[in-house]
Image (cartoon, rainbow, N blue to C red; front, side, top):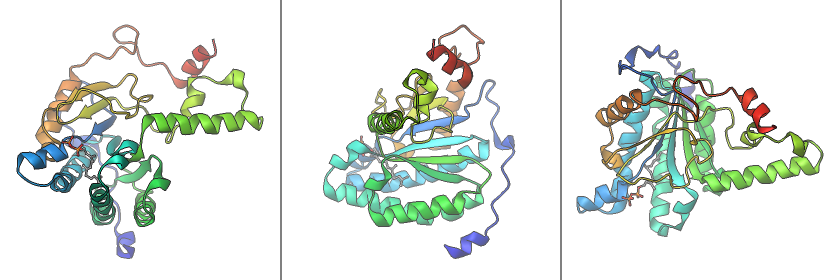
Length: 271
Ligand code: FPP
């Protein structure tokens, strides 16, 4: 890894590789990567081969998004509920994740991608957490896209963790309960600084959010792709982007309304 410190990151890519889709382009894309198991079973393979094949899609979609000038990409890689899977599958996923965090460093550096993780990261095995922190550190100064891996992540646990921290701040007198508004609560989420996703993509056809970014996705556009994650590549990404470019976003208002600024939301929430 030491030698990678010497790899100069590419400058932030001008979004020249951005396809002209004739409409708005999402700044933040979040993806529920579903269907690895089905993809493998359809081929008479064990489920874990689907997870392994899914890594190639992670690499291709991350690289494509970075080159197109997407600002943030959040990938739902392991949910809090996924710990309930058979031990052998969880062990395999953790091993895959550790390899990913080491093997993908050159690609992340080459594309100027900064990686950060959200979730109950202390639940992860020590050696995974160690590689994760090293990759975060190595890529921290990269000027391009932010790649967020959601690991041991659940939206309800994120809200519970946030509310616990908020109540502690009230108890020690650091926070006035009367001043709590939507934006105060946002400040207690895992990564409050990253804007909400504009587009949430789910692969493998299911139409649900599965405890993913429930707060942040309140006004996200949702695109469901029927293909399983290992087959979700550039053409499927472009189909999602084309669909997004045709959407009219109203944020509960009227056409052409802009989403309210955080300060305005705070004022409204406080009545
Ligand atoms: C859902 O497919 C996918 C997961 C639970 C894990 C996602 C993991 C990867 C894409 C590979 C590892 C990623 C990284 C970043 C290291 P499923 O198993 O629920 O599929 P099924 O619904 O067909 O059973």
